[in-house]
Amino acid sequence: MTILETGTIAAGSLLTVASLTVEEVAAILAATDRLERMAAAERARILEGRRIALLFYESSTRTRTSFELAAKSLGAMTTLVSDKSSSIEKGESLKDTGLTLRALGAECIVLRHANSGAPYLLAKMTGLPVLNAGDGMHEHPSQALLDLRTMLVRLPGMGGRLVNAKTLEGVTVVITGDILHSRVARSNAMLLPRLGARVVLCGPKELLPEDASGLGAGVEIERDFDKALKQAGSRGKAVVMMLRIQRERLAGLELDLGEYISRYQLDEERLMARAPEALVMHPGPMIRGLEIAGEVADGPNSAIEDQVRHGLGVRMALLVRALGAGGFESVTV
Ligand code: CP
Image 1 (tube, rainbow, N blue to C red):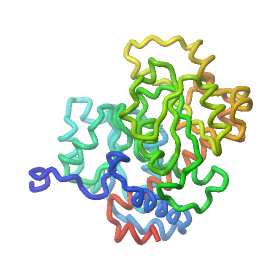
Image 2 (cartoon, protein in one colour):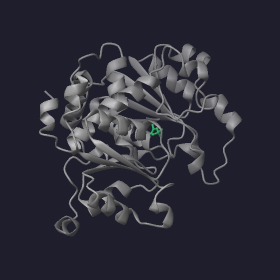
Image 3 (tube, rainbow, N blue to C red):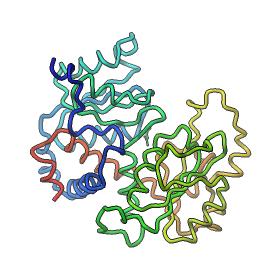
């Protein structure tokens, strides 16, 4: 097969936010906007009869469901292959699973995998467009795009703003918690500064290494959450993005949860005292009472359900982009 010999990454793949130009980010969000406002019947013709495989080696609620609903809203057929109920359990490799899906007519694969770089390998091995739905501790590009869309919709004065290198000037995004294991933090820290945001990473040494240079230019570290919140709250627009402690990836790392909660939990008192106007975000799943208090998650500053809703639109745009679909441009103008 020519595709396998050349190992080309298919156009329309999204493996990392680093591969997107600011213009491409703008085009994806413009398509999102257009698709969200389109009549359902018109939308359902865009990918009518196309085949999309959802290949999930790790559990997921939001990403899996929103990619599936997005594909179906566009008229595509989907099939879900999960590591827990497929021949992956019998030892079938990623390559053979991908080739099997391709032989069955899949035209695009949405992949979540515990290993960083697995989407890249799958794209090389199948020649199909691959959308990274989260790979290990590496990246979660569609999450960063939906987070950006949520900020543009929810932050005051942002409505209708064009996406360019200055769009998020004056916005401070404090990302707090388990940065070390977070692909969401990594994708956001790579994307948001390119649009002008100041990104502050916050967490204890165990969960946030000293050297954050790999996370991109324009990223700072502040270990004191109260200080980070206060600074963000007093300098223009503030976003506080809370992250879950990923117990499944801690691998023996000892963490005093009581101390963690007292230093890093976002509760109402802390938020109201330091950044009362801040937009509160969380990629989910959240553990109420650990990194975030229930009253904040459900409170007026919270954009957590908006993030989930925007996931649907952003993922529709990414699927249209991945499959060409008679001109991605036609839904971006
Ligand atoms: N945000 C996110 O990736 O959530 P899921 O693990 O539920 O997909």
